Amino acid sequence: DAKTTQPNSMESNEEEPVHLPCNHSTISGTDYIHWYRQLPSQGPEYVIHGLTSNVNNRMASLAIAEDRKSSTLILHRATLRDAAVYYCILRDVSSGNTPLVFGKGTRLSVIA
Amino acid sequence: GAVVSQHPSWVICKSGTSVKIECRSLDFQATTMFWYRQFPKQSLMLMATSNEGSKATYEQGVEKDKFLINHASLTLSTLTVTSAHPEDSSFYICSAREGVHGYTFGSGTRLTVV
Image (cartoon, rainbow over all chains, first blue to last red; front, side, top):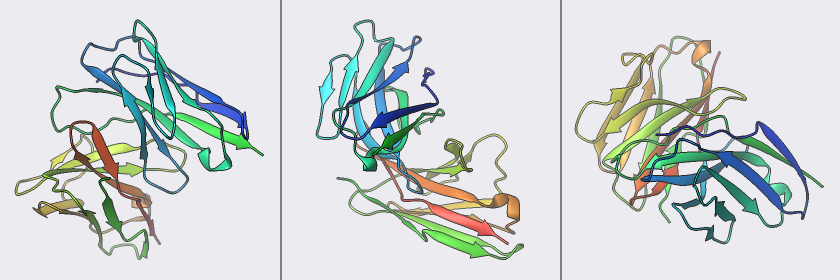
């Protein structure tokens, strides 16, 4: 799976929107963009995923650049419970039953 | 949604003893499960892929005789850390895929070897 690049850390004020960037310049046409987050001392949890179009769900929005070489996870109103490490992961949909490969992610701190 | 239950959530064991960690898919069948290890302030590192009814596939550098994986049913995979040493202390996490895009993770097991 292609590699992603994320900032090591970001900080946000509570109740403010947060934009978490991810670069994936070597993305292929069959790579889906997945976002997971890991709260302290817990396993990762699914946030959102997409292929080409922007996606919205109750947790977040995913904005995908037109050339697909970057994407942004948007948390519309950060809460203290959103403090976590956010992982942007590319996965080739044709790769079968293979595991997710995690990079270093972005550690998001939320300030009250 | 799909749920993966991991047990125990934490365990402390003496050096030289063995510890078993269980991972269950509660509402779906998982022919394949994945085991990760995570050291403090680091990302998840894939250890092995567990296949129901066949041998596990280990990542390079992971000792298969030390980390025994058994996947005897479609809903249960176990990881046994044999002859544990302090350097095996870590956060162990299992995962299974449900559907084309859905990966579900257990809540993790924090192992401390004293």
